[in-house]
Length: 385
Ligand code: PMP
Image 1 (cartoon, rainbow, N blue to C red):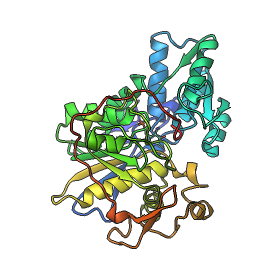
Image 2 (image 1 turned 30 degrees about the vertical axis):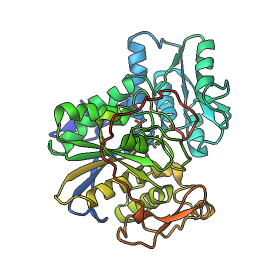
Image 3 (image 1 turned 120 degrees about the vertical axis):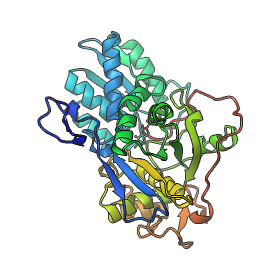
Image 4 (image 1 turned 180 degrees about the horizontal axis):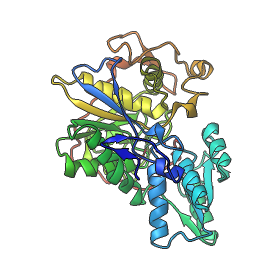
C-alpha cells in the first residue's frame, strides 16, 4: 500500500515514518493578489522532519547502501546545520546508523537542537573561515569522514542522488497534482537539488514549464543568471537558499528568469502567508513566495504557477515571527509586502543598514548571455542547508 487512492493522498497506516516522506499536498493561494495567475504551493513542510530535504536525505542514504558506500554499523557524515542534517538524522536514525553533523557556530539553534534530539552527534566549528581552512565546516566534515572507519561523506552539493530525489518524486507529484498543466515553477537554490531535479523532470515531461529562480539579495546566483558574470557575495538572513558559489548540483541552464529578493521582503511574505492563508512557512519560502508573486503580477495572460513551502515556519519562530528580532534588524513586523503589492511605502533595510523601497527594486532577469567560468568551490559558509 503506497497510501494513495484514486489520485488523492490518503494516509492510512504506514510501516515506518519514512513512508511519510513525499506525496505532499498542494494548496492554492487565494487571499493574496496573484494578478491574472493561479498560484499553488507544495507543502514540503509536511515531510516528517519538516522540510523538502527529507526526500534527498533518504535517496542519498539508500544509494550509498545500494552501492556499498554505507554498510551496517556505518556513520553518516555531512556538513550542515540545516534541513539536510535533520533529514539525515531522521532517515539515518530510523535505519540504525550513527549520524555526525558538522555545524558552523552561527547556525539556527532550533535546528541544531532538533538534530540532537533525533540522536545526531553535532560537531560545532567556526563560521568565520572560508573554504580551504581546516576548520571550515565542509573541509572539517571531509576530514572527519576520512578518519572515521565506516564513514559515508554525503556531500549534498555534488551527490547525484540529491537531484534524483526531486526528479523521481517532487517533479512527477507536481505535474500529477496540476493535471499535467503547469506554466512555471518557482524554486530556490541551496545545493541545487530541487532546481535540477524538478527542472530535468519538467524538461522531459512538460517542456512548456518555465523554471524561475527565487534568490536572496546578496547571493551570487541571480546576478550570475542575469549577466553570466560571477560577482562578490554579500550576506543575507534567509536560511537554506542563496550561494556564494555555483554548486555542482545546480544546473542553472534550466532557469528562464531569476529574482533577487531582499531579506525584509522575504520575511514579510512568510508572515503574510501565515496571516492570509494559514500556512506556517520558513524564511526561504518567503523568498519563493515573493518571487512567485512578482512573476504572477507581471503576467498579462493567466498562468498556472507552482512554488514550494520548503520548510516549516516553526523552525524560525525566534526570527521571522519574532518582533524583537525584526526590530533588531530594523524591519517592521507590521509591514505587509505581499498583502499590499502596490504600496510604495514599504521600506526594506539591508543587512548593511541602507534602505530602499522594495517595489522600485523588483528585478526580473532574462536568461543569461554566455557565462563566464563557473567556480564550483564554496568560498564561504553562508546559510544553513
Ligand atoms: N529552503 C530551505 C529552508 C532549505 O533548507 C533548502 C536546502 N538547502 C532549500 C530551500 C533549497 O534546497 P536545495 O538544497 O535542493 O537547493
